[in-house]
Image (cartoon, rainbow, N blue to C red; front, top):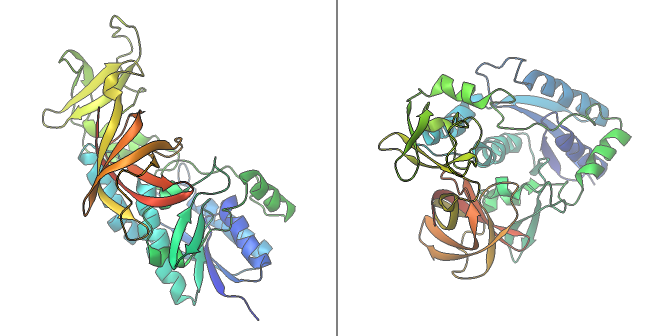
Length: 362
C-alpha cells in the first residue's frame, strides 16, 4: 500500500534535500515544492534564488521525485515584509523568519500543498513533533546546536498536525554524510545565513532603501552627547559595531554598546562596557503571545526561555499572563533583551510558545 503523500519544501539546501530523500526512502509519495518569496532586486550578486532552484531541481532528479516552483512573493510582501518595515520604523528589531514560518511556510505553502493532494508537509527544520493526549507538541531537535524550534514557536495545532520534521533526530554532520553518500550535488553547499530577502548584502544599505535616515544624537543615560546616529531604525540593543564613537574614550576605556532608544526625542542611548547594568534585564514584558497548545502556561512554574536564537535556555517564571501579553522573570538577568525580538518558553524539551518582547526591565 502506498504511504501518504508528502509535499516537501525544497530550498536547494542540503537539509531540505535530505528531508525529501529520507521520506522517499521510507516509501512516502514525495513531491518537492520550491518557494520563491522575494522578487525585488533579485539579482545574482546577493540573491541566490536562481542557483537554489537549480540545486533543488538537480536533487529532485537524483532522488527521483517531481518538483514544482511556486511564487509567494506577493503573500510574503503583504504578510512578512510590511510587518518587518513597520517594526524597524517603530525602533524595534523584528525576526521575520518566525513570521515567515507561520504565514508562508506553514500557511500559504501548506494550503498549496493541500491542493496538490498532500496528506502532510515536511521541511528541513531541526525540530520534532509529538502527539500526546490528542495535542501536538513542538519539541527541540536532538542536535541541540542546530535546534530551530525557536523559529517555529508560532505554529498552531492545525499546522503542527500536518507537519513533519524528519531531521529532528539527526545530527547535522549525519545529514551531510547522507547527502554525499547518495550523490546529492549540494552535499557540501554552505548553509544560508541571514534573512531570506536580504541574503548576504549589507543590512544597513538594504534597510536604507526602504526607510529614511533621521540623524540624531547619541547620548549616555545621564545625558552626555557622545556622537551622532543616522536613524534609530538602523540600530539594535546590544549593538557594538558601527557606532562610530570608538575614539570617544571615557574614563573606563571600554567599548560602547547601544542600550536603548528615546524615540520621542530621536536619541540613541549608549553605554560603556559589555556588562553595564543598562544592558541587563531581570524581567521583561511581552505582547502578542501565542501558546502552541491553545492554553497558557502555568504562572510561577519553573520554565526556561530564550530571548534570542542561539542562546542557552535561561531559567524563568511567568509572573503574569493576560489574553495577549505576559510578564517573565528570570533567575539571572539577561543581556540585551531587545524589543521586537521573540521570547520563547520551554518546559524541558517541549516548546510552549512565546511572545514579542515589548520591554526589558532591570
